[in-house]
Length: 404
Image 1: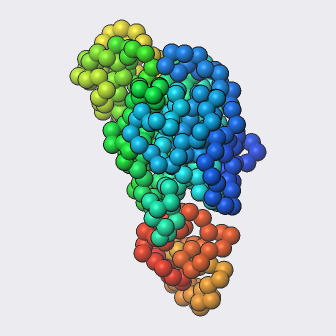
Image 2: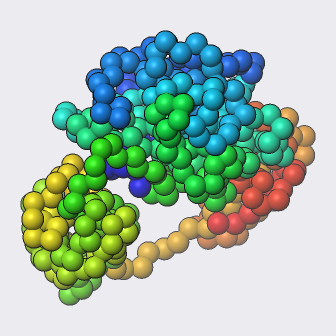
Image 3: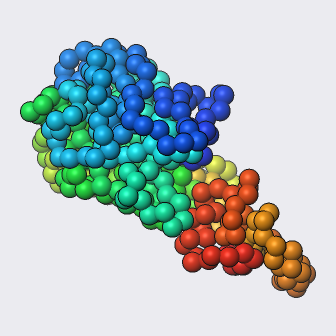
């Protein structure tokens, strides 16, 4: 999940060339047909507090560094080290060890949410590892985000999606030449999200949270709501509301109130949950009151935690998470057979495969044919997902077929 659940955008196709009017993104570092040298983006204006000090602007390097030191001129190289780094400006946030390659690689930004709890996301989209560390067998890319949160002034580093990319990163915050906080493993920290390219939505994302100042004592976080996109329910069954909570405070949480609502108030239920959640630890919650929705409709379920240890939460901005699910009747339906054929425009053998495909369509009931443009060169209909699928199946030619 993404921090606070505010950013629900898909991560692809948003490389720098995927940004279109109306989607709310701005390009900080545009894509290029040739590999770019090290450079800073133009200065961007933002009200923020870094390490307790007010800041008014920032800029980003195409080596994975965001800095509030606008006067910095030397761009950090792609050769990352542990922190503090000698060539890193003061007041910086780092996903250090990335490189902007040719093609779709770029840096984009967008504001998510509403005041006073907005988040500014700076995304390194379709990025690469430095040359020499890349697995070039079937393409490579990685997506990361630096998040600046309004009001709390929290900083997040979001691990979004990676494919076929060997990463050795330094993740952290550098205050000055002698003071820094880094994630374990630097300078060889890996992506957690590397399962074959992974999902383009936030469901498999991982993030690191940097909280400024003293940690509050009582802070319950609802990290997720575990509802499938489609849930089955008979006329007599109920659906259990469950998910993950986290203790962001310095005191252990022994109890908290848990409330769920469906579509903004319908079936509002609150229960006091007894638990033993150490600081920084997670907890799988289960609400004692099941949900009995009407089948045949879609609902948004919101879960909120409050009153940790019987007192007011000291940071209520992270207390809620939501999930949307369509409720069906628990009935079986006819399944279709999906036949996927690898094919491309330059493939001279592919027309013969049409004969086989038509035979299958005529003889397999409820079958559907889809053309996948990969595995024999490329054409304008080839995309990263198809290249990834071809690689996962070990194909190196077209026509080739698979059933799903």
